[in-house]
Image (cartoon, rainbow, N blue to C red):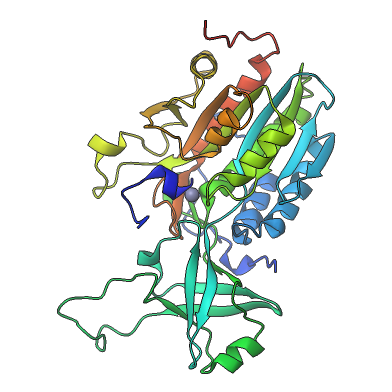
Length: 394
Ligand SMILES: [Zn+2]
């Protein structure tokens, strides 16, 4: 979710699979599967790989390659647009076109300024949260490959102004790669404009909760790929062309979706992204509404959301006993839904969101049940939908 759009009052304010962060799942004894589990051992392995890889805004190629490789057996055709949005097509060539969409990019940082003594100051690439930076480990994606570094933060004993604690801000958090001169930083292959991502990866908690970096919105990429897999495995024939779209550059203004919406010109768009679980005591439900992990995907009302398509999805949820939650959006949705709705002549669009705790931190938390319910809701919606579905307002 693009934070700039999402919350005007908030902070406006080389490819490497890092298996060391993979969950060893010591604390997660598997419960007996309730009913049919959508996620398989193979899809879970893909999810972990996908989350443990970097896919910074504007540099999503590393993640897109993984995603397309997983998706390939379940689609008939694929293409990649000039800025890297990846698309798989099922049943190509039909006059009626439906999109299911997620975004591939993760918030990150850019190297912006290197001091003479080798500290690196950064610029945001998307709405990355400076307040959580101190103490975190990063990968700097330089010209010679990945260089490890840390957001160093002086010790509690030594910080200047202890009475009036310095808050982490973009201008006072810096990355230390273990070298003490600008020259040595450059010798590592680090340059102005190199992207920087956090190292934190996938892990499992109790009660089927998962944590990871940038589940926003790579869980969406995972879910639309799983929908394609289910369609293939269950040998479903669709009366339209289905475009499975993993768009780039959502986090800086919904740009990848804007580009690909114009290229595909879909008749219907079903977008998935994350939304806030509002159960934490620091979040005001009177402002943010009431959404909780494990209670199902959240459907939203908002001008960009097509009312009749929304009612259609709601009916599908009801008929299939898929739990859903509701929220209301002011003006824009802050998601690629806006791009699909408005990019062309008006494309009926709907947003199906995954509840998530701690958005834009390295410990984004989601619940397995919501992943499965969201996949199911998209899948069943696609099976119900036809070119004749009446979406006319008047
Ligand atoms: Zn986001």
